[in-house]
Length: 299
Image (cartoon, rainbow, N blue to C red; front, side):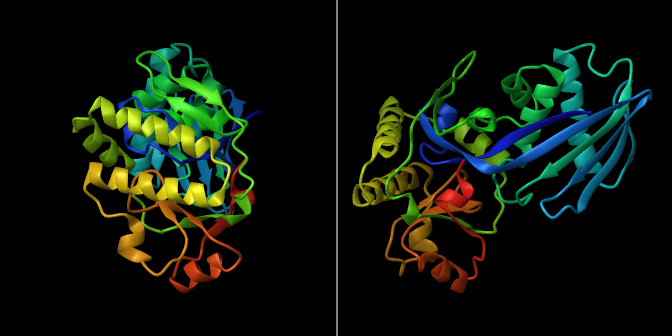
């Protein structure tokens, strides 16, 4: 049996603009996804997926000839997986030609949390099939690729999308104030593919890219919580003006004393909040029960 593992991700800076070539600060998470493959002398590929609670949420059977769907309990997911398998074979023509088997995937985080259900899958499949994960991502889900970089990262990274290949630089992002940092799940899944499409259609000035790059460097090297909070707030308003969406703190948490920053596609998934031991209680009273301290979530 072959087994693979990839880390989830959080985008700390340059959201949206990373698609246009800005340098982003991204963090791999301790929670990720496992994929295992058991080879069998068969003309079929059986696929089973399990969530973070060990419950099966997907089951399908594909032919290995053209990856036609034989059976499935979710045709939408099965069609997407078929497209991924075909994209893999396009890169690697001998992929699953002579034998079939069983694939099992298991998540360590909620499917809809936005921590990288798709990117960890792509990264694991690329490792298994010996194909380029960035090309595979481009031909399937699309996006900047920072999540693919996080999948194998050992620490925080500066990520810059390239024409042919990305530039990934691991950095020592280990803030002395990390005990004051909390990640809160907003429980409103955002369609990242739609967000990507909208941003790619938007005209962005070089000055915006340079400003995003500066924010990433400053946030990545910040030494005090007070400076960090100022940077988060300034970055939030910068992106707010760019995408014409009000900051999440203005919309939902005006009485919160610390700083709040959206992470990834605005409006859902996780936010970063600065505070103290009472911060989780604040958000749980507001109805947001999933709150991680920095050390609990970040790899």
